[in-house]
Length: 177
Image (tube, rainbow, N blue to C red; front, top):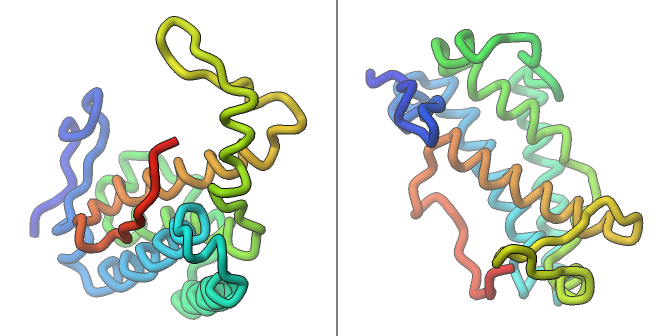
């Protein structure tokens, strides 16, 4: 079984491999549930069909609740293993994936703002500073945008730590923001 490796990620950070999780039946199972959860989050965030269809959004929220029930059946609660060090997580694929599941599980049941509802905020409040696009997310009127971006970051963080293959991720025809 190939273990996770320190130094493979950006700036020498921990970069677990798929094999790190897939070499153990429990970690592989929890990994699959986590991928399904973040893919549904991603669909609610970025899929134009979900943004335009109450039925599709309701279906995604129902499926997320079912996945949350599955995490509970697997003994995973929000915040599980938050007290462990990175060294502990790097050494154990079960604890690592349970930690990730505990983090993303905290978001289930929360309202997810689709991209279509925040695009106008980016255009209205964004500015170019030193050649980079910037937005002051501390403005109270931008709470929806901040939540949207935080959840997108969580989706990408989860895919990175779970070493998901492109075939395991959804694809949507959307422009970048």
